[in-house]
Length: 197
Image (cartoon, rainbow, N blue to C red):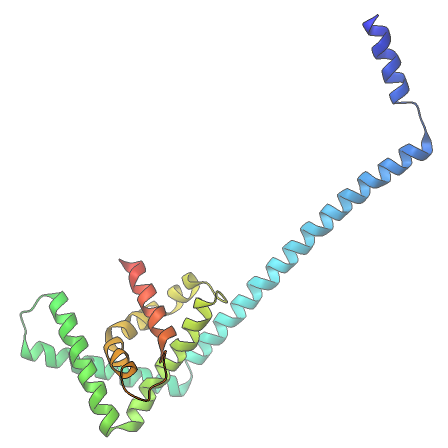
């Protein structure tokens, strides 16, 4: 009895109603095609996003290597060496942590002197901060991943934290200075420094 009912059910279920079956087959095919199109569309959008990001990073790298930035980086390196030399001469036997704090303080003093007496050199150094202000803004708003920027510019970003943070903190407290002066550059340098531990 059960076999007869099953056979009857199967026979009725698979009776060929060509119009209805054609409709259902076409709907299934349409669903498969729509799924494939959505998958291809997503893949294409992902590729475009990666290309946009790569183009942006290449443009940042090109901008960082421009002659005016190269001059500013050379000046920055020379001033770091000068601050290191002053600290080493003054206290040759301090540990690395103490030496770093003293170099920070010395570099802040050098920047203050440059601001008063060497406006051209000071302006060159501020170009570096301006560059990283833009990069920090892009990272903060999610336009470019921090990981990519960290891999591309880790050394200079850490250098900003060491060399410029105290100076900028002091400038932000001055009267007439707009709120948030170089806040994105400091955000970027602080975030990268935290990643290092």
